[in-house]
Length: 213
View (cartoon, rainbow, N blue to C red):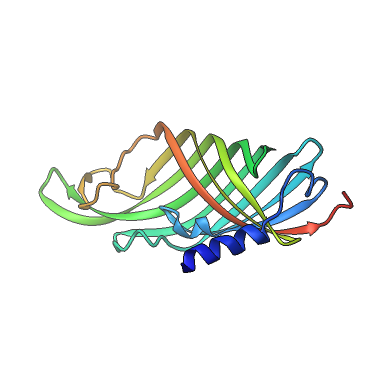
């Protein structure tokens, strides 16, 4: 019963979207960055909605803490940034679709076991990883206006992601063995990886400028 009452209140608070925000600038905060695989990110974006129920959006974020998924002390995060931009088209029933392009750069270190001097002994070393990611994504989501100036949106999508990864900080005679995790690997050459990328995003918005439409 409690869930039904909450759902009815949300429906009463929400208003139709089409035409309501034309010419407006929205500032948004995304808590999704707190659950990133590599680190916790603070993410802020700005969206401008122009004629034809279309908009452009730019988002930026920076890492400020260790990922909640990484309790293993072998993984030490250093720094990271995210930049994302895209075009969006609003549809009926508060739905939208769009195209996103993103870039992120991260530096971190990983402790692992190496064999030294032709396997004469083993040693635990920390090596550095410098990683760049480029992605092109298709997006589909739902946008919910709440009262006059507040908004909520939920979206997801898929696309392609290119990863460029460089490793450093290991002596020439050291050969990687393991650090007992599936993630860890090491290469003396630059890795270039192309893979499918999936994402889910939640955003809370505030209408910074209110048009007269």
